[in-house]
Image 1 (cartoon, rainbow, N blue to C red):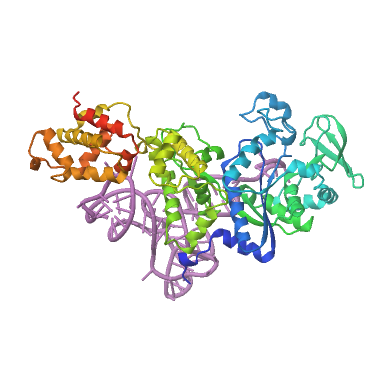
Image 2 (cartoon, rainbow, N blue to C red; image 1 turned 120 degrees about the horizontal axis):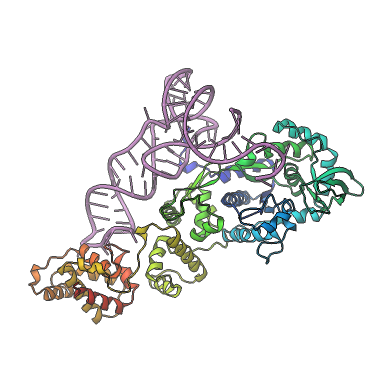
Length: 534
RNA sequence: GGGCCGGUAGCUUAGUCAGGCAGAGCGAUGGACUCUUAAUCCAUCGGCCGAGGGUUCAAAUCCCUUCCGGCUCGCCA
């Protein structure tokens, strides 16, 4: 049976169909530990989850998307971006540690906030849970009781699946020491199911009793399985790290079935996003692109497209240099392609999101507009308005302009860059007499004419080669020869324009480029260039 | 070392589950539009489908072996 693009099914639809057979109601879960600056792989995770979620909604299933922040995990070490004062907090739950900037509720929130904003940016709006709140609200109490009671069975599963026996004093529950505040140093010595408390002895020398409600957490592998049951998770994407044999999904699968009596969620294993070859501009030491860096240069819908068009198990190579331009191009072309196939339309549909900023201005076009306007937003707006673009959604245009501005500054290859020079560039000396005559004639004509559109400018330049045209006659007069002796190749005339304005022989599409500049500037600059001698 | 995932045109890749002429986009090259170089359109070039073996009338696809790359596995994301 041969397959073609027409009957290809998008991976999200494959997942939704697979998962959909089992249940009518779905809970798509995603989560990360906000222990530091949020990693690029997490971006893929949430987009993947969002797409699966939307594919399920399209099947008229009752689906919900949730995001769990693992705020109750311990701080593992003093990360390079933290100062030494954090040494005393190592081992404490992230939610109980002060924020590095002093403005957030706690350490976890500090890193969570920009990530939640990034999700908003991408049109992803899950119900957000914080692990510390789930524990403190008592959502985990039943699971903790079961886990403590079936401690030996869980240990056996961990042993069988991962191949390593847990230590003899291992417990599925990690109490928070009331003395030192650490969640990874206390050992369980007993528990009371009726009082819902756990007894512990801590490495710090303290021993005591904590409530099951908020007094500690289940260890990761047990926590994950318990969470599926507690929240009713049916679909969950996760990175390769959890997917390997004997890894946490393997153990979680058995723990949730055998201990908690619940079917594990449909897994979506995804690969990481790799950084492509960076240009010479970036520092040679391994550059890590954070989510915020990525969102600085890529419009959100393009970032969604990047992830959505690729199956989760494939690496994504992301190169913010020139290849980014092709990516954006491809997306924009698809976006307006009337012949797009069913599969492509599906990709497009999933890349769009409610509340996502959209303008009809192409990214590449904005790189030119931005540079013509020298980054000034008012000028950008007036240029795009004059070019006939929809300017009602100013916020989105500003977002695009910011993306483009950052891209030009951080990643753009030299060929994409130009600037309208303040003064006549010295390269003007390379112009031929004919080119100078052309500029002089053009200057005169512009001075005598009213406002011209891009097309007017364009056509005007082409009249230079036509005998009898005002431009052609003026050129002959300046050169002091008969009209029929003047042979004009429009290409070199365009070159003269770019040289006089940019100091380089090529540039953006000339017609509208000229129309986006002040006419007075053109008149003066071209006159100056026509009489230039070094 | 064990495991998972990848390897298809210069680049990014579809197709692998379910064997049936290996497809697209970008780039390159050539051309058209009396109107562009970074606009649009048309055409062309470009492939030992990582390698080797096996099954089959038929293999990118299934089986075995192997090479390359990424990730992962020390109970902790």
